[in-house]
Length: 321
Figure 1 (tube, rainbow, N blue to C red):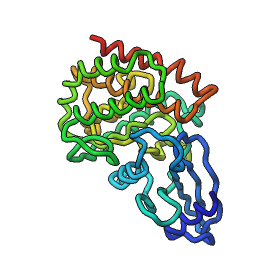
Figure 2: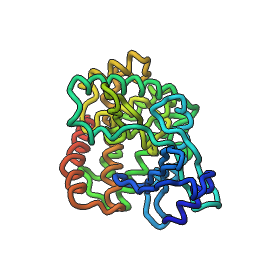
Figure 3: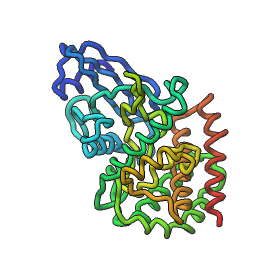
Figure 4: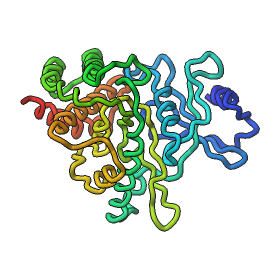
């Protein structure tokens, strides 16, 4: 892939002579990711989507465009990568790609054993304030930016859910309940989605692995939030799902305090348990469905069946009545 990457960097105005080092980074499940260190010391991240012959879910089509949009809109925040060049939807270079600045720090799981309980509480409060700032990004319609948008959140989310259920049928994914039953249970409660009247740009993938912790200095801080590929225009409450992945955001008092102190628009009110159950169900469906075309096996597949499938079953049970 060396020549292709060189072509992409050249399109971004970086000739081979300026590249001091380029290293593939592991850990991703969709894009190929490279760290690019330039001769002047700048550190960049290059993202390249999989080849066209690799099966992708519908929402994943054009997600580099979504990620670029998220970063450009969130540019005032220091914890968000700056887009250097977005080679998207064109015929030149080596195909679609996204080149951005590298943010300081390591993913939270990599440093969790070196962070005290008190430091973690402070970091969660800081995270709440950052997310509240990100939720100030509003639009005029709902849905995935790279897909057709809708004028209501109920319509947009219904379409998103229907698409992943259709793909569950297509790939013959084993789910806790038949897809028709899941459709019925979600439809029974979709009127609560009409309470969402302002489209907010939701990251929807803010689990610990996408939160970078910068430990340079005496006090750890959040160095960055990455991988905004799953972002959509919708209910800001939906971000609370990945922020408490397989858990309950109501138990994260430090995060909620920081979020509300900074004026975050999402509120835990009478309808929020139902809306959260819908959004958790949607995320867990994505996690289970994508495992089939990507051919997950071993520990990752076992973890999905042991943790995510029961979690989906619990949310669907909440939607039963």
